[in-house]
Image 1 (tube, rainbow, N blue to C red):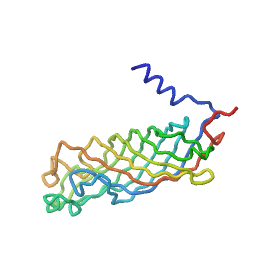
Image 2 (cartoon, helix red, strand yellow; image 1 turned 90 degrees about the vertical axis):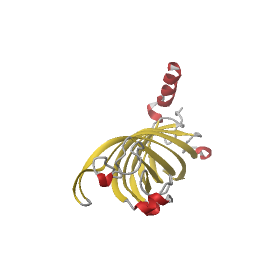
Image 3 (spheres, rainbow, N blue to C red; image 1 turned 30 degrees about the vertical axis):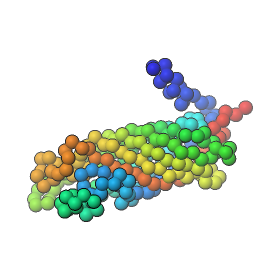
Image 4 (tube, one colour; image 1 turned 120 degrees about the horizontal axis):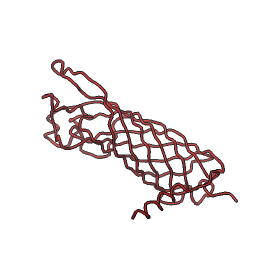
Length: 226
């Protein structure tokens, strides 16, 4: 098993220096929260998100990528289909600033120099750190003192990308984030008014959108030149 893992890693990173190709660009779309408040749907964007992306394509099947995302996260029980949650009437708004790094695995070979290989579905496996606001103290009736917190998430997702024209490519993707916290919605077991839902269920957030990237590097394809 150890030999298989080493072989896989070497296969992902074995390239010549001339075969490197980079992509840089932006992505925009929507975000939604999955937790103890609001809608029970897994993918239902209700806020704006945006960010920047950079990729290093090590070969036609694997790309190393980094992203920075700024997203608003909000939910309201009035959007819930669960009647108990609907009549409870809780809502919140938070802001997430996320830095993620990981791998993008192409289902098919992706080579912008070959018209037969300029589109493919792909899978994302990443690790993310994100910053958000939390409630630290109740100062009055529905009055709270806030602070910021940084935690980690395990992101994974699916996407589809294709050449747009020239050195530009466009992609649509959905990225789900499983977090290790239960307070993105300001849940706080030390404050009665903010104790709700399942204390053993951590929060999720989902980023859905479109990215536009420009490719650069020499040569403008993945194959090793003669």
